[in-house]
Length: 172
Image (cartoon, rainbow, N blue to C red; front, side, top):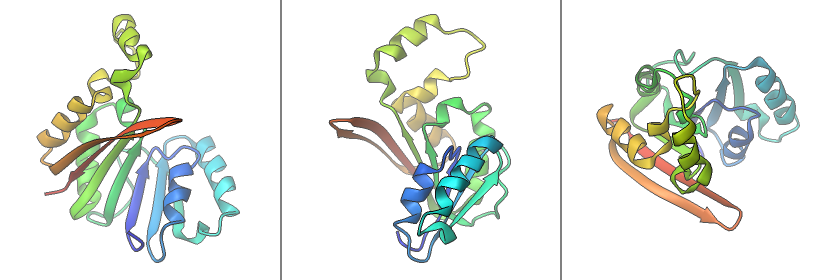
């Protein structure tokens, strides 16, 4: 929606942040990332953008998001959820910053359909930075339910050159 307050967790170079900002008229989008270099790149790429006044980048991780409680309509995790360590703490933080009936959206690859996914499960060991249950749509849905999110939807988006899973849960 054009007036929403959006936060992107693990925004990287800011592609999703810019795409969202371009669809806002009065809203604002904040991108957080724990890597200063990524934020430097994101800022450089966004400065030229006509929607840059609706964008803020902050150096932060999902475990301590530097925004006010109940201040966001939408919290987004694009290709990052499976990297989250202590996922419960981070989802609690997402819940804290969401307005009542705000939504959390995880956008990710359709891991279950990839050959790398089945191979990685075989090769996996304790020091992997990926959590496999967070690479399955059923695992993410189960996690959101356990945190008290409601009206959870689980869709896939398919185009010839891109596929993604899009899972949305609403703060109760």
